[in-house]
Image 1 (tube, rainbow, N blue to C red):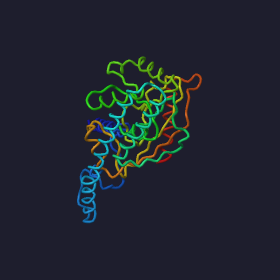
Image 2: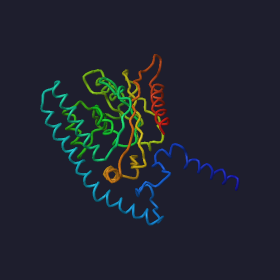
Image 3: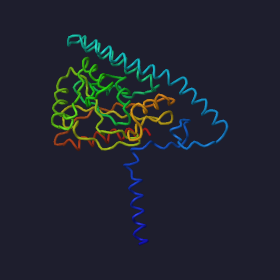
Image 4: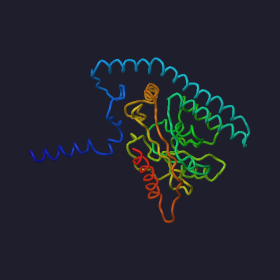
Length: 307
């Protein structure tokens, strides 16, 4: 029995400490960054560190958080109001131009609400109309990180409440692709709507996160093949966050959206780098799975090289 228990224990340890499960928990930092969430079991180390932590707490929650919440409400409010107004205009060049300006302005205000410090690299490879932009996924704020440097058509499920109000106002000004809950399960219908969108070269590039869930920014997980079945140019983008100033990873099993956003706004800053990689196309005889793996490998190489 001792032999059996030994192997059983080692097997359970391997399952609990496997490489995949680690990608769905916050990255462990080598040093404390004066944020409570990076050290849940805070212990007294020295008087100097305790004073610094206390002052940081007052600054983050007493000064930065109210300013950031105000900016966030301003950005979202302007987005809903202005896109609703633009939606009243007839379709044409003027409407598209105003829509892009409004989206960029509002997303940049929302980025300021997070005190996001973003460095964009290789802008000559930025996605163009009629293509699909695919990126690794760490957080819901990935959307505004990318959209503050260029306009995209968003893809997602239709929601209710405040999110539903935002979606309905946005689609009036820009052809985003929203799906009903029942439609999302129909892979062929989703592919058809995406294909129809990219066939129109006047429409904005589609932004998709093929991983389908948030990963803790230490690796890139398997890409779903759906967005790679469409015969169009794919623009890979690699996003890398620096967790020393604020961890952008969203563990949805632990934190709700509101709680998560408050944690982001109460951190010191969100620091990240964005690399626009050269566009890629599906090669002759290459299926969607191999194409997806090739794009994923390009994004993963960029992230690992910069780590």
